[in-house]
Image 1: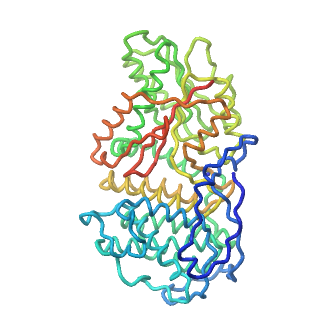
Image 2: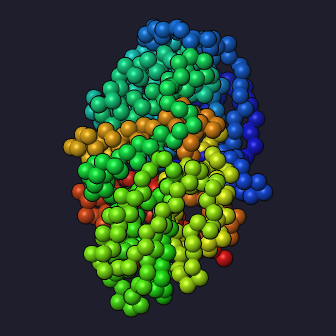
Length: 540
């Protein structure tokens, strides 16, 4: 599971202008053309890069310095040189909060949620963002940082929700100051965040906890202080997911109670089956097979086919050598195929890196239809253009009948740190809200899932350059990228969409799982926030 030129440095503004013109709209930047002349990391960046500013005298050498309590710290009467684009992005997110639409941000304290409805985790972050913009100057005027920065809470919110809104504002302020390299001020704000966000608290508190930890690690790296012991080149998130899959009970609970996988399963399987319907020899290549759930569904669908029964199904799984054992998955699939009386040939390809993948390894026959399934793999290679380009060239040569691509629908590859932080904060807030709703009672499962998400947060917030091993980009970016390989998008059948909606409704939390279309792609989200994308592709 992130190309354009920079923007001018922040213009000098007055104190009042800071309050009303805190952001600069970036929509036109996001519509600029994609350049395929060179496949490099920046090809996946669709946000402008902020030029560094040096307008503040900020002590950065705090390596061995303990942070004092922030309650009585005074700041100079000068606004930080924030990224205009970053805070405009925050403002845009706030504008998507339905019951705030059309209301003046200056009157937000009088807003009441409909029927005193409990706010979701992301809603609280939206309110915090709106409040932060509204009172932005109070965070850097010559004032004390109070424990309750604005004196009164929001009418209609519970005491816990007001505390969570306040806590999220401290986190936003800390992130902005990290982006401005004001590390002392950021550390003081993080002190408050970490003091008031136990990892076992509310979903908002848990989100703040993990983002604060990642910000703290980023500060330590920037000032040359303590550096995390984890290897910078390792994909920790992927290893955590693989370990979760090894725990069958936990993996099953997540699959059964979180709707995303099952909802996307039906369109993917249906598209594969439809595009190999006229063939009796089928070759399914799974780029990240995991527990083999998708393969079992395809096998079952093929076994039920009345016309043109399958003569042979080949499944090829790709694994990183020394990282994952694909043989156990193969044994399960072979056993399942035997129970279906379905002829199956299972093959594994191990490589140390995707740069080693070659067409010959797949042993493609002339009379077989090839389908490729790519679940959340390409995002792990955005930072390694050589591997990604090699894999895509190989796939192009194979020229499958259909390729199904699953990715996270998020822009976490912006070169601007604060932009990236804001995007990630709203995305993970929605995901934490989902986990809280779906598996609140399964403590161990929830903790394992949140540990994986926390590593994703760390990868986005604390890391830079090659250390950021996973980079999520949205479907519009993938469309531009795939165009280079003469790939064309194909839609999903109405029956598969109908089935996907039925599956969502079977979950106790299914009403919160949203399924929308972006062109021919399906976007699966949580309470309207995009989380996953599933798209189908053919080759010209």
